[in-house]
Each structure stands twice: as C-alpha cells, then as structure tokens.
Amino acid sequence: MEEENLSLYAMILSSSSVLPMILKTAIDLGLFDILSESGPSSPLSASQIMSLLSTQTQTHHDSTLLNRILRCLASYSILTCSVSTDQGAPREVYRLAPVAKYFTKNRDGGGSLAPLVNLFQDKVVTDIWYDLKDSVLEGGLPFNKAHGSSAAELVGRDSRFREVFQSSMKGFNEVFMEEVVNKYKGFDGVNSLVDVGGGDGSILRKIISKHPHILKAINFDLSSVIKNTSSASPSIENVAGDMFTSIPKGEAIFMKWMLHSWDDEQCVKILSNCYQSLPSTGKVIVIDMVIPDFPGGTLLDRSLFQFEMFMMSMNPSGKERTKKEFEVLARLAGFSSVQVPFTSLCFSVVEFYKTL
Image (spheres, helix red, strand yellow):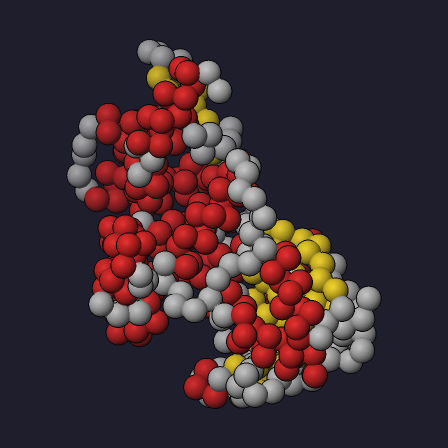
C-alpha cells in the first residue's frame, strides 16, 4: 500500500466511530425505509426527504445536515448518489445501494439488521469498550466492569435494554435463518430433529416450514423456558430438560449459538450427550462462528473478529473456535468427522458426524 493510501487508511481508522453512529441515525430517522418506498426509479434529494420528516414532526429545518449524512452513507456504498437537474439547479439525489436492503424494516425475505445496529450503538454496549484496556491488564469481562453485573443480569432487570437485545436477536435470526433454510442442504432427508436451546421454537418452526418432511421436531430447553412456550405446530413437541444431563433422541440435533457460550470441557459434555442420542447415521448441526487459523484482511475476517470481540466481552467462560478446535471437541465426544458446508453473515454451519 502506497504511503498516501496508508495515511488515508489511518484517517479512516481514526474516525471509524463516525459511520456506525451515522448508520444508527439513518435507521432511527427511517431514511432507508423512505428511500425503499420511493423506489430505485425515484431517487430523493435531502430536501425531499427532509420534507417527509418534517411532515412527521410538524417542524421544518434546513436539510444541510441530513445531506451530510446521506453523502457519508454514499461514500461507503450504502447509498448511491447522482446529480439531478429535473427541477432546475443541479442537486444530489439518493437511492438505496444493494447492501441497504439489510437495514430496511420490511426487507424482502424477512428480518432486518437494523436492530443489530441499534444494539451495537446502544450506550449499554458502547460503554463496555471504555473498560477494554483495564480488562486486558487486570482480567475480567469489559461488560461486567462497565455495569457491575453480567450481561444476563442486566438484560433481566433493564426492560429497555432487554427489548433492544431481543429485537436485535430476532431480526438477525430472521435474516440468517432465511439464508440457512433456503441454501443449506443438511436438513434434506432428516425425519426427526431436536433443537437444543430452542427457546420459543421460532427457529424450529422456520426450519420445518421449509422442510415439511421433518415429521417429528422437538424443542428442547430448560423448564423455565418451556413452561412459557407454545408449540403452535402439531409437529413440534416442547420438552424440558438439561442438556448437561441428557438430550432427546433424533436423527439430527440442532444447536444455534450454544457451544460458544461454554468452555471445552462443557462442550464435550454437551456433544457427548448428543452422540448418545443419535443413530449411527446421525449428525449434530451447530451454528457458530468458525474463526480462521490466521487473521486475513477479508470482509469475512473483519466481520468475524469484530463480532468475536463483542460476544466475548460479556461471555464468562466460552469462546469462538477454529475448525481445528471444533475437530478436537468432536473427537473427544466420539464423533468421526466435522464439516463446515455453509457460511453466511459470518456464522457457519458446523456438522458433527458419528460415522464417516
């Protein structure tokens, strides 16, 4: 990289907190939804968007600041910008760029990453980074240092942040699982499926809606969760229990965002219980990040390591793992092989097979 480009890259890094807050502001103002409703054939200027916002608030303001926001988003290819002379003097007009579809509220295919942006920029989350240095030097979790309690405890007592957190997970799950059920082929031929830690059963319902050949589906979680869950489907059975004790039998066992919450010994116990509940041809389907052995400069690498920093800033005993580390867990639990057939939005499907 030439020196001039190096210095520009350094400047971008120096101001890297600006873009996330601009992205959050655009979401809060509904800019992506306004441009989505206008459509690609009808780009809008900042003044036109401002008029729509003013109608909502009954106030009228200059659009200069709004145009700065739009230009910054366009510089990152989140929007596109062109010059229009339809109304006389040249003016900048904006459309959604392809990536912006992930930040609209009513994205085709369901789900949105807009709530995830709001989670990452929420003050509860941004405050933890000011304790990152002390966590490096003194130990402990940045989240706990910042808030004097664990993430689970804070989510339990703070109704506002609980809504922010749950909305972000719901939006992400809808986006990610839409990708999984449409592109991942590992549910083909499965007649019975167990979702370990399935919560309200929404992910299991999503899976069987796309794979009606799954005749028996078990939503398995703690009794405190299951007692408040209705199956809303005749093919789903809610079962209460403890995955560290035993797991219901099925041809395949599904776990999303489970193993990264536990240390290696606990993961081996969970996987061993899965092994005992599977037929010889069975498999475990795990959704987790698969960290590369060596950090590169790809978009996937950046997404993985940034998300890992967030997840592990509040996770007391777990970790994100490489494929080799998953293979070690598999071998200790009795499995013969591990495959990673699918990755989307920085999360992968990791398959654990009993037999080769």
